[in-house]
Image (tube, rainbow, N blue to C red; front, side, top):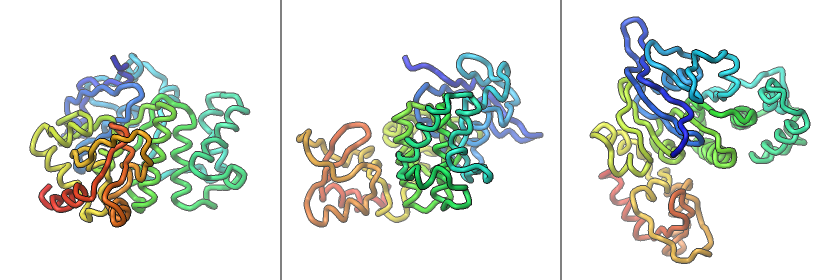
Length: 320
């Protein structure tokens, strides 16, 4: 059985006469990537902030590592929980290296190990330590700052990282790159992530499980496959149906995997052409020259996307 790292037990948050979260219960498993989705005002961010007690619940209990959060010293609690916002706030008077190593140093981790970790993480995001370690935040582009903010959250090797719509202000290319980065770091470190987004395709791409919220309550918690194929009600169904990119060329191929447009690749040694994090537009470019491409999928290993299946998806797109 998977360990429950965080438990929200009938939590509610009321501001004056407005109930933002109502009797919400949710277990977050150790090592999972849980995504909270829902329309604006559904209570996603409030729920997220109750985990690290940036917002204190009106009723109910938040349990972390088997202990009520009210029993923790707040500083000690938050040293165990990373937090990434939409607007990354790097410390302007600290270098890139100092920003990344801040929490490890506060936790008195060995300096040599911390320095090596900083260099290793910078290489993971194609930022040469020799060129970037000593730069100041104002010398970085917006995308570079966002990458450093993400590295800082994971560098501390904290038990949980909370991410509140961290990519919503970014252009599509950078957004896709950082999604892939977070997924890669999650798989590498096994960190528990709770991620808030209003982008359903982003939720399907990243989440091990997705919790769908509306009016401060959870309507369904399940895997991306189950959410798409067996939505709990019409609201969930419409939420994900309407999430499809207005331009079919921008739809992630992971969506085709969930909807069974892919076939099993019988050749285990086949060359991978694309990941399912690629888009329909990228697949079309390859299929213009051939009839099939091989994909590396999240759930089922190698798969084949045929030209016929891709155009079947495109033709059915407007009916979804």
